[in-house]
Length: 226
Ligand SMILES: CC(=O)N[C@H](C=O)[C@@H](O)[C@H](O)[C@H](O)COP(=O)(O)O
Image (cartoon, rainbow, N blue to C red; front, top):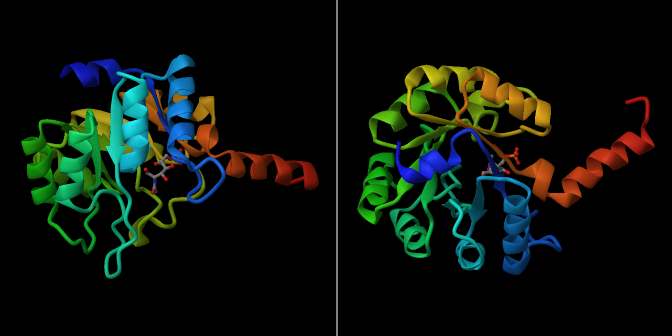
């Protein structure tokens, strides 16, 4: 296992992705969120966008999993769809670059993104929705298989409100480094991911999207009987 994976193993990654356009969507706030997460014991952070990556890289030497989201016409793929994004993120100091590894219409082939990851000298994280995605990504050399996109593709839209622990367990069988990610909203759910075979767990919304968390509490207060 490479140094950065060893640093992430057995730990928590905090995804510092504010609500787009919200009051916290500023690079200095993202960097502060990352610093706070690391001070709280996180072993790494997940950061979206070049400005946020630059601000965070300047503030820490901890492992950063970076990505760039695009809203494309003609493709549902949002997470790092282009090889030039991979190069830009690597140049700005990402340790790992996350890419959408689902089997959907995309502007550039997954194999080309894998090659860009290799050429840039970083590690790749495959954001997957299914076991088949994980298999393909593993064979293309991605270092981390993540359950990130389970529940967010047409084929997996019925996955439910909770995290996909079954996919975590199936990725464990495939080998490699398994990242549990997506709807791990409580410490109990994160612990369940490790028990299911995850090497690390990424938590975003429940730690860094204040508007969403506030909404959960508001709903509970205004409708206390659920
Ligand atoms: C589906 C998608 O685009 N996921 C994104 C990936 O970077 C983020 O919006 C999520 O917040 C992240 O994966 C962490 O998950 P959660 O916020 O559920 O803890």
